[in-house]
Image 1 (cartoon, rainbow, N blue to C red):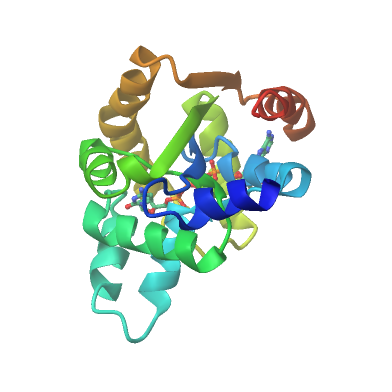
Image 2: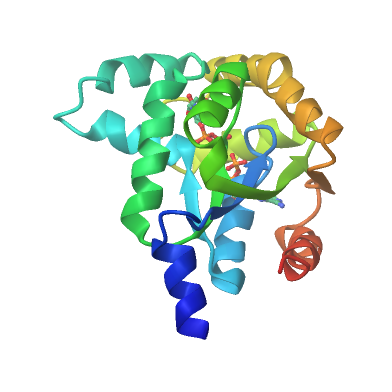
Amino acid sequence: MRFARFFCSRFSPFKMAKYNLVFVLGPPGSGKGTQCSKIVENFGYVHLSAGDLLRAERNNPGSQYGEMIEDYIKNGLIVPVEITCKLLERAMKDSGKMSFLIDGFPRNEDNLQGWNKQCGEKVNLHFVLFFDCSLETCTERILARGAAGSGRVDDNKESLKKRFDTYMNSTMPIISHYESLGLVRKLDASRSPDEIFKDVKELFSKIN
Ligand SMILES: Nc1ncnc2c1ncn2[C@@H]1O[C@H](COP(=O)(O)OP(=O)(O)O)[C@@H](O)[C@H]1O
Ligand SMILES: Nc1ccn([C@H]2C[C@H](O)[C@@H](COP(=O)(O)OP(=O)(O)O)O2)c(=O)n1
Ligand SMILES: [Mg+2]
């Protein structure tokens, strides 16, 4: 019986299993990556950071998008969704898994529309985890990360100002959109990683 249910949910042409998803948003430096690592350790999700996937694509010598991605990232701008969505979809497929944390996406209206069009039907979005943190605190964290040798072309004052502008003007409206759908779980991300994770844990324990 269990096998039959598994077989039908996986392979039946009539009922395709959907990916389980949590979007993770918050300003640069709010701790998205840090908390995602803890969620992976404790709850077995696959962590897909849109920024990490774009940086890997930029470093791929065979990519036709390398220079373009570098330009967008340095200027704190959001890469067109066709590229990001393709990278996310490929990573989801290649993982062979069904539950994902999608970190740093969707970050603007183009991301949201493109995702809904291309992947909306294939996923079950549990909620949007929103790490709320003042830009002052985020600035301190990002500049410390740059000084400690992150090697990122955008962990500097000039790029960071542009990233914050993009966050305020383009990402906040996406968070408001999900808020109006009752899907946002907002946490105070100015606390220590362990304190934040206590709340994160509670949210993930309630899934399923
Ligand atoms: N709660 C926290 N308190 C202090 N520093 C943090 C916290 N969470 C993350 N950091 C540090 O701040 C920097 C940015 O964290 P990161 O997880 O990469 O954030 P994001 O992915 O949102 O940019 C990293 O150097 C990280 O070690
Ligand atoms: N959906 C996304 C996510 C990131 N990017 C680009 C533009 C962002 O400024 C950079 C870095 O994103 P990343 O999520 O790694 O940065 P933070 O974790 O917020 O510090 O990547 C994008 O174009 N589209
Ligand atoms: Mg990150």
